[in-house]
Length: 400
Image (cartoon, rainbow, N blue to C red):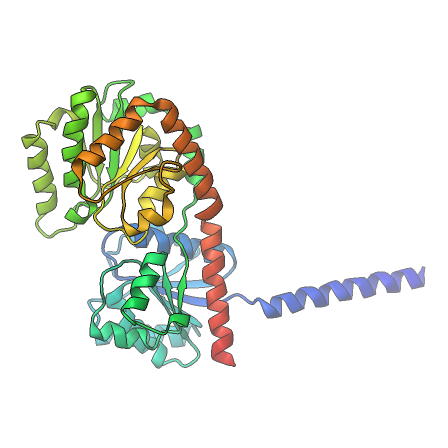
């Protein structure tokens, strides 16, 4: 009996040792995420998903945002520590110093910035705290100015949300190629997939003032010329010639100072005689419900660094027509997981939409393949895994 007891105690001690060694090797991290965003877009949804994923793994996450940031309502207040700072611009010395104090006070190990104007502020905070490592994510394809080039030269790692963004960074010689990593955006595929199971389309159509059993085509994104809402509406006018009972939804907010983009679209809808058939709505809180209501989702963008709305629609089981932007070309396999058309060509956009409206079997085929692709390649867990691995690698690098 004594020998058996000794064996059991020894086994417990071994397990405790193994567990303690695991904890020693993979401790929780102290992370600061920074975003001065004043509207919600793909980059902001990325940040929210990343923060929640990191918190669920036991990491201590701080988030620095502007006082009226829309991100505040999206984050879990009982699990995420939120600090509000002016974050006015890339030369906001006061905010830079506040960030440095925040990093020092909480012994932050990783400072992760997501917007170009925040890169210099984050860089200063890290320079004042030698234990911290600077990570920046580049969400867009637009070129950076000289100040940002200097800042990114000091970043431990630059994360690109697509191969197209990484290629642009390398072409612009923003940083050494070995400091640029690609972490594709991710979505909560289950959230969008499960939405269809609880979705009542008749109820949705009635709430939107639309007739039952209509064909519904929609697009989602900030109201700006780069998102291609003008081309979408012009294509809608062509589609209606073959499908007079079709209806269209344009969902998105206008972040211009005088709402000129929305005003332009409202006038265009009148000029195209589409007023009874188009619903122009502000940003939708329950996006999965909107995606599920659509017979066809359209991305008519002129440029996309990734195309998060495309992936969300695919995850919802909705067939997609997209322009051949850099991001869409990485996401969609032509005629297998969606239809691709040239950027800015209204006739091609209308023809692709019409092709899917005419063929319900094709819509189902594309939707099923697309949903499987999202689950396999664009999940949040994969995105968080890869980002967390970068954090740990840079901390090891900094301590060596």
